[in-house]
Length: 306
Length: 253
Image 1 (cartoon, rainbow over the protein chains, first blue to last red):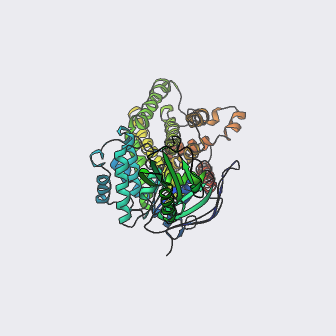
Image 2 (cartoon, rainbow over the protein chains, first blue to last red; image 1 turned 30 degrees about the horizontal axis):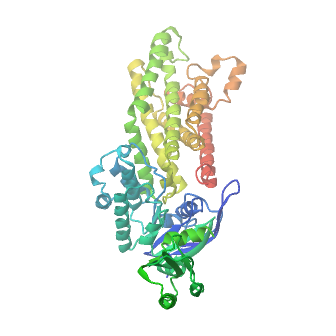
Image 3 (cartoon, each protein chain N blue to C red; image 1 turned 135 degrees about the horizontal axis):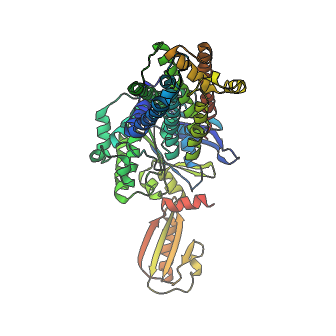
């Protein structure tokens, strides 16, 4: 299958020598939701800006919808909708005019019914005749999304779409992203909210210091790098981990009432059974037990702080 | 060719003019009318004719040029500076429009506004002074060519400027003096010889001279030279704009 976005050996050095991207290789496939994670300054926005044509690459090859972003920039850019991170909106324009402007700019003939649908989907219909400067921050964010969707792009970039956005808008946005995906739109999002990636993404890429350090199916990533944890709440306080248990990675909580056993999510429950059997043999009784899987957030923190 | 894109930019810019009609149309019309009243009617009645042309009529082409240059520059520079300043330029840069199309949209709209304004000022002048246009075709041609050239120049300033001060400084400090010293209010012949020679380095002399020739058939320099110089400036501006886009100067890092 031909990828919707194909990045090969991409490098970017800014004037002054800062190298923002180092030999980035990335394929993003049609119809998937791809989350790009990385700490601030890792190069997420630079990567997106290059694909969308806002920043010039230093070298490497980038294709969008099968078209080279430099040689066939028209076809490549027509396929892309971009919602940038910063709130950049006109002030005096009316919502309807601004969204229609975007459609024209991307070379599409007027289609009022599509603009109407987009505005309605984003709860902007009532505001269509308002000047953008009279809208709240969340509404402005919606306008920017509407502009990006005005020309029916098959690839949508959302750069930190939910930064500084209230819970309701965030829910709406997740809903919208799911609907778009059902219609076959490829979605690439960067986010600081890892729960967002965890909830929405099909695949996850992690970028650090301008390098893609990992690209993985979300579920595989979670099971491959995720840890599981078993907590046993003891009837009686222990002073130290019994010697018979030291073979396993078992720790005792500070108050002495909990035993904590950590194991790889991939590893089958053999370790747990063995642990419980040993406890039984030792006559250590417990009144409750909990298991917990590590979240993507913990995996992410582990990855970028290695 | 992305005609819808050009049209979108053009319409956006023309809508901006409608919103700022006071500033972009009424203000220049009023200030030019003041020149007509003061120099044309009040002082002009005590001045002798220049050639066969009454002084009031003589200054009309120069005054139209003054507004045309100032408005072309300020419209076009503001038009591209604002999206840069507010950040909305991201959309134009990420859109499937070529450099030429971006220029057509922004500069086309700015030049259209200037031509409309020039015609309004000409109509206003009729209220104060009687004048004829000997060569209407050339009059319109000069109007349009100058509007396009200086809108391009304004576009360049708008891209170069990284603050509001720079945006103002070129029209105020360079263009206004050049227009005043470019024969708006006098014929170059009336100057001492040294200043006549110096004046020939002022590009605006050629614009005003040619424009005045289209009205009255009299000119300081031959009209062919005026046309040539106008086209030369146009070419220089186009070359600069294409260099800007090729290198991404101040637009794409």
